[in-house]
Amino acid sequence: MSTELLTRIEALILPILNDLGMELVDLELKREGRSWALCLFIDKPGGVTLDDCAEVNREFGAVLEVEDPIEYAYRLEVSSPGIDRP
Image (cartoon, rainbow, N blue to C red):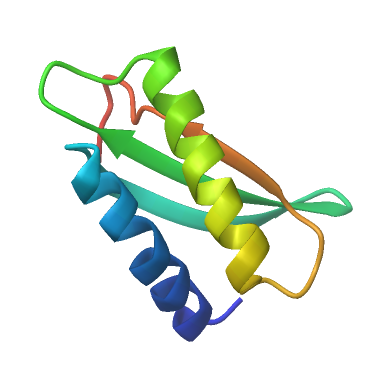
């Protein structure tokens, strides 16, 4: 996985998160067994809710469908960084 690809993905997600008042804590594209996962860790003042994660997943998923920056199959996961936030 290239740094260039992660930079492109970050450029696609940041405007969405900014509009929603959230920040990107971490971004990972990792292999899990025979498949890939694009993992976004988001946060906002007061913490994120399940509804926040679902909204980011919907909005960013639509952008990913159009822009198609990843040339292989993957799963999009959006979550909070949790208590052990980096």
